[in-house]
Structures are given as C-alpha cells and as structure tokens.
Length: 75
Image (tube, rainbow, N blue to C red; front, side, top):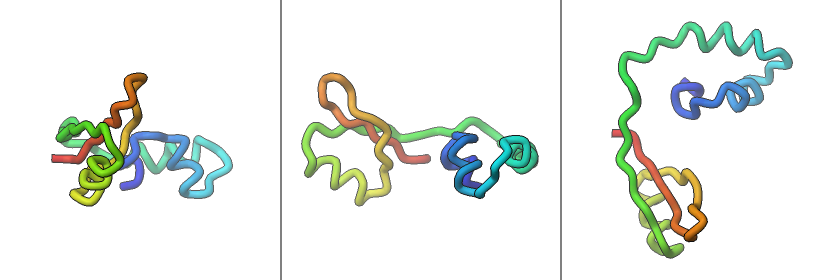
C-alpha cells in the first residue's frame, strides 16, 4: 500500500526498514495495479492557498521556478 501511495521504491525500502532492495522488490511485485493513477491537480501562489489545498486533501508535489506550488489529489 505504501508503494501505491508513493511510487518510490527507495522510500518504501526505508519505510519497511529493509537493508537490501531485493527484499523490498519481493513485496512490491505482489502489488497489482488495476489502472493508472488519476489525479486532480491544483496550483497555489500563496501560503494561504496552499493551506486550503492541503486541508482539502491535496498533497504537495513541488514548486516551479516561477514560485508556483503544485499539488495533487487522487480521484
């Protein structure tokens, strides 16, 4: 489930406390994704806008060089 959320195998390896990536790969091979992830996307220019997005369930992705914060939420 953690891999489905993060899609980052190294994060999952650290999260599970594995010392060898092979152990983590064994667990993630058991996961079957039925379809690609679909997301709602949103942007924020101010910290208040970002706060509102986070409170409504969006997760922070990154900030662009133009200082626009990008957020996403699973559909």
